[in-house]
Image (tube, rainbow, N blue to C red; front, side, top):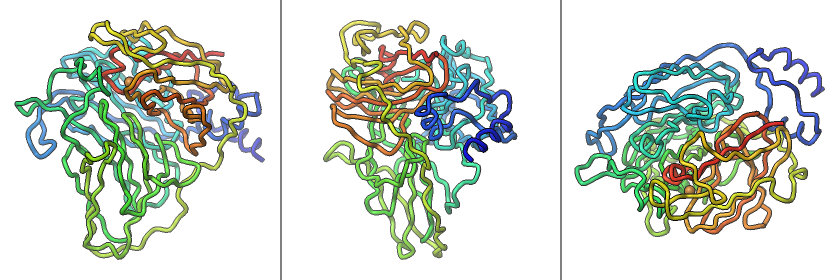
Length: 463
Ligand SMILES: [Cu+2]
């Protein structure tokens, strides 16, 4: 039956979305069933114009803040597509610097990945670039520059891409919360000192003003009984959030855009830079008139108020349906026991910023000159991150998802995929993956200052 369905879906694939062949190895085929290698192009196209430009906006606590914005908004516009639709984004750069757009977590064709010198030339001021691809996975993704990102993201260049399921679950409401922080100078403007020695000696740039959707104490007004899909995205340069939803009926249903195998208790989830969490939140019918404060408690004893959920109005009927869950989860028995590639995460003196962050002793600061490490296409691989430092490193892969297999040598079984995993001080994390898309994919720390100071490399996926 499955074979017949596969044959049918092959007939429906548009030529541009067609992949050369299905994996022959049965274990890999099982993997590909959970993490599709093929996308059924359903036709249809979403077209967007995206312009990056400086502007001034009422931000944070309502003050006028000079920012760099996509389409005059911070966060940038929410782009929508349905899985299988073609997304076409005509991007124009009106910044005083080169830039690109990277689609974080989206398995795009290599030429659409937005990495200067690797997948495309930089988009110069006044120039345009057309990004076009068919998203393979439904979920919560985001986009941001991949040039001088420590400055460009901090100044406000980030936006969310929602790829909807073909038949979205009937939530009462779909809400995006973009979590961020801001470091301001004495004049109240964004501190223009980027990639400082202080940032490099720590976990990147952590600001003193924490915002959700660009506002301090964002408030979401809901009615009793509503069931909400709440999509959290961490766009901060360095800050890790640990949002506490303990007062609410909330379950994690997706991590980094990908549906979990089952709904998961949100307590203790660490949302590192780049990470996303989708929550299934039900507002109790009897909660009318109440308000719930959502707090970030990543740093013990120093909680940050993130947002409020204010319940008012007439109760609505709660939609009843099973939380979305991933039907197929592959076995990981074929992952090699020893690492295919291992990376030591460390710092050393030197480089253009005075401190260099290294992967196996290398700290290239130009995207085009990465050493490149080969990963075999369509085969199970194990990557090992050995954090030799005392700082935090959220390690991110472009073009592929992975699963955490072990922490400090102890097996773990997270029932979800990731594209970014936080490696704590002195921690060793093993992840498993099967690279399914050929190309030179970036792998880097998503503390943007660490990445700019060298903590980037490439995974060269080839057969
Ligand atoms: Cu790092």
